[in-house]
Length: 640
Ligand SMILES: O=C(O)c1ccc(O)c(O)c1
Ligand SMILES: [Mg+2]
Image (cartoon, rainbow, N blue to C red; front, side, top):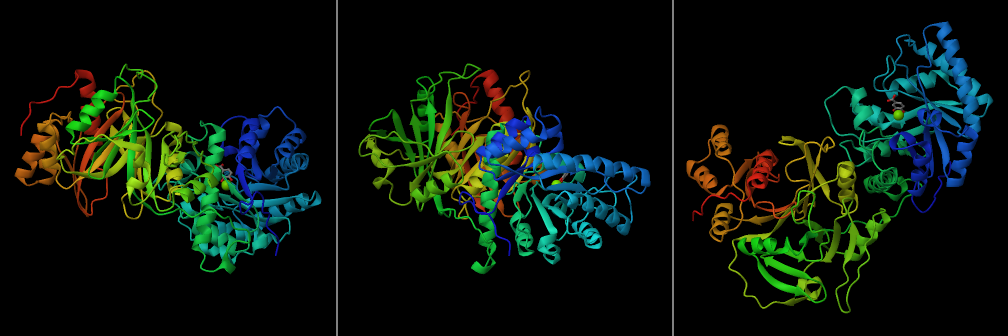
């Protein structure tokens, strides 16, 4: 059996197509190398636009430690007409010559989409055999790929049938997970292709979209683990068939094309590391594992939100503290060495860190933002080791003597993620706080933290979803998309199996312009759980909490749609409580106004098995927050 390279202890050889990354060829190669890829697929357009000769590109790749695993694509090769075929063969000779200078031994020929594509298996096989002969003379190989929108050949079964008929040692197939999984083809059939005929493997995930497959492929591909395809199952079949080439990513994505290539390459590498881990986990016996497996520290089980930390300033701190008091929290502790307050109610804990730097945001609002979220881990040190193995920045801690060691990493949006031990809090981080001696408030019925919701930077939404999935071992829930007052929003939550850690990520679907950008920029919120939302709203209102007012139209529509119990509807209307339900249960929730630049709180009551986030109500909330910004705090009088 051919051996598999093991470089840097990272399992199978990895590769990335230059088309995945933004920038010029130089930017792309540097980014691929610094993220630790072994090789690249060079896209023809990137080479044509590069100032270097193919020989110089080869030299640059050598310096960077990258092999050129594939040159691609060669389009519309086969042809029903003799003249066209002769011209294509001439074009191919030029490219084979170039590949020798580039030191790339395999070229990807994709199935024809041309109007004059041959529609005869024997003819295509014969033409490919001719090409394979020419390649073999130079010691090169042809990998034939079925594009999902190929004119005649569009399935991997068909591409293999043609390769089989051609029966040439320099001709094999290129499998691309997107083309196969997008059409709903069963990848199990790959197992019947001889491994030495699998010349190349391209991996891409994608969200499930009901759209033209070419548009889907060219704009919406994602790195493995970011979309809806079962890439681990797919790769399992390919490895079982005996494929021993690199795992190479080929992702066409409009956002990645604009994003920082260094970061995108790290995101890409993280996806391949996690994919290999999942393939190994799918195997029941060691004998069936890939010859070189990666060893990642397994993700320890998580057991709830320990605390969430807000960075506030001298201006934003006092109103946030005042709001917490009116929500029924007690200031129970003061950090021994830092300007940090601990506020608590039930198992809900908020740290107010007065070390926030910027005094104001662009709109003149005093800065207040989530800067850390802390989850309980059954093995915090291993959580941090895993994060590091998955290329996440591990954060240094400047801690005072005797203070708890907290393991922390930076999430893609810069939020610190702390891993705290489970169980008795006194023994660990909370021991860093001196009790204030404040008597615990009777509270307003909040039990703990239900979720933390963070708007992601436009360029990093899919990266963030993969980060929480791979690094923390959380599972993504369904993606929701809704039209909000200031643009389309996409949201996706990740959660642990016990659903006591929930992080809700959202992003604008199109990049926001500068001209019209009202509303709350990049809002963040912390949602607390309760067993009685109406009672909590009533109690908070009585204390003067800055609760968000919801328009009457919303309740009229709820009544029309759902015919709720009139007393419940009246209570929700009186207390600005919103409602949602699904086949599993019901959801009552309400919000505070925005406090400072971007943060607010939510209170949620889950009834039955409801596990969503009331996404349908988010546009109403956003409009209400905008109104609050425009009119100032215009609350209705207190009803108790
Ligand atoms: O979209 C394309 O044209 C295209 C080109 C080369 C590929 O390998 C591919 O999967 C798609
Ligand atoms: Mg492809």
